[in-house]
Image 1 (cartoon, rainbow, N blue to C red):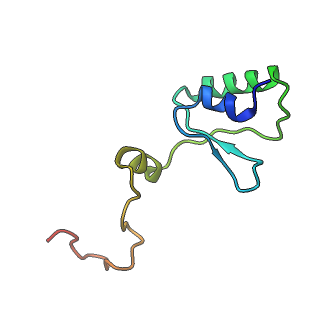
Image 2 (image 1 turned 180 degrees about the horizontal axis):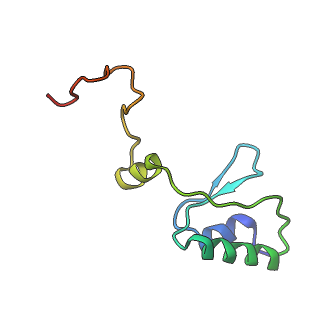
Length: 89
């Protein structure tokens, strides 16, 4: 029988992440709600017990990281650049 990780990897568009306790899995998908429905159907067919499932839209930080491979430096909350100061004079 397939494990939950294998099922998510098959449907995912990126790396499957597992929390420290090994009880929560997270994977980006490009198919939106159709992708979630496919995952749920395959988990049910494999008789994988499921406590909760959900979907979230990527944040701007998620998108930046996926495009550049690094986290955004600074930002609106960065204390090192006072309000009104030009960052690139």
